[in-house]
Length: 327
Length: 277
Ligand SMILES: Nc1ncnc2c1ncn2[C@@H]1O[C@H](COP(=O)(O)OP(=O)(O)OP(=O)(O)O)[C@@H](O)[C@H]1O
Ligand SMILES: [Mg+2]
Image (cartoon, rainbow over all chains, first blue to last red):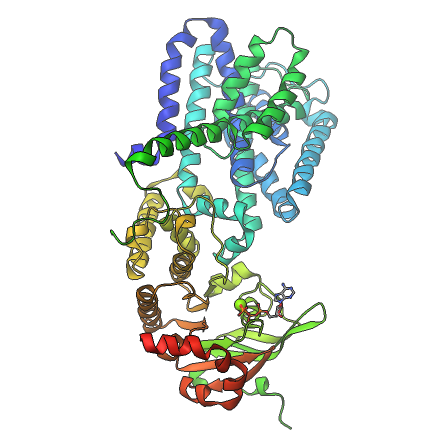
């Protein structure tokens, strides 16, 4: 009962995954797509936390994912770590990086912070290209082992979407805590946040670190699933795509990024030619910025609100001041 | 040789007081404050009055880390907190309300008050994400405490109302609740009673007295002198960035300078306040 009230989004995500599962499982091609979709959903969720909650317009999620992916490749393929132990490093490394950078750049204006994340992404990818001994340079890695017993696309799809659900659960926990409320406040009014005792730079950096850790999970999963990795695998394009997915779905809503991911994936599949993709992305962004700045989720909420007040106007007195006298 | 007034040692009784002394603030050549001091002792309510633009809010800003004074010191229990960032001032135990309340879009009354508890939440950021038992218990405790604060201010029924739907007076009251929620040892209230109905003002006064009785020191900016008189033992009167005089409300009310500078101007509303009381 209270779980339903507190974890509505988690339950909706579980229900959606269960409904989609039989259809997806019936076709091997769809199973493969489901894994990649899961990777994108994790990346889009990471944008949701960073941009939607902490107000950091991040352009470095692809780079964080590649840090996670290279951690996975190194630990499992080169150093022979047992399965899943590399996940810890794949999350920790991007998180530490993001927290450190966050402490410095979150003091800047939002635009400067966004540019700083873009620069951070570039630095990471340049490093990966040039650290031949560690990352294999331009060639990268091949033969990254599977995650222990998880081997078939079906098993990967299950793992991917379990991770998505786990992230939604944690995200929802965060937003129902003092730290989540702090993010809400500081995004709207930093002076108000400071009067509550919130260290703005610290809270924003913590959210950025969490978002980087989630991107790290996405990279970890990707590396093990695809089993090859090069500097081009998870580049700035991925960062921009994830950002678009989150914004189109509604970055401020827990499930917005996932909705954006599924929608984008479906629409790009329907596109006749891959060359149109860039055009489509640009178009999607313009439409969202013009019509619904809070994304599809926000648009939906507005429509429901309008419908409700339209219906309720006759039944109840106008919702001006709440009925204080009556209470 | 005797130094300026603010160099005199703090009396022993006020060893754990919040003291501002010799505060000077200039905004582009205009002196908003020119050597102002105020002392707030735990459990006492100090009034801060003065005409519009006399520097009351600026003094608040200096005492809470929002404005760094050009000169002067703010100390808390003897420790220098001048120029400390606002969030660390709050953590040191000084909370404030804003004269123009700052409301978060879409938040309901209880959520707004819950935000005030940020400092007393022990769970770490990652602990909140994991959502283990301790985090859930803490969240439940905060909700209960928030409800208790709202109960005290007569706002319990408005828990689930969006803050922006309230009257300005009630929004201020929610701000007071948020301030109390912080658990601060000192609370600075900037015109909390403006726009409240008589009944709401009485609830607010009662609550301010209760909070003070729990040992919290309160600095109160208020234009309604009847309210100030009923609540405060000491009143500081500001005029154009200086302390005009300081003392018990009765003494201050009889001071000819105060009458000329301030009370004369608000005499009417004062009489109304007294007539209603
Ligand atoms: N940020 C600012 N920039 C420039 N001048 C300011 C600023 N804040 C305050 N002032 C000036 O400092 C003086 C004191 O202002 P302050 O707001 O402290 O007065 P107040 O006593 O709180 O007045 P009120 O009763 O209207 O709230 C005024 O002359 C005001 O114009
Ligand atoms: Mg003022």
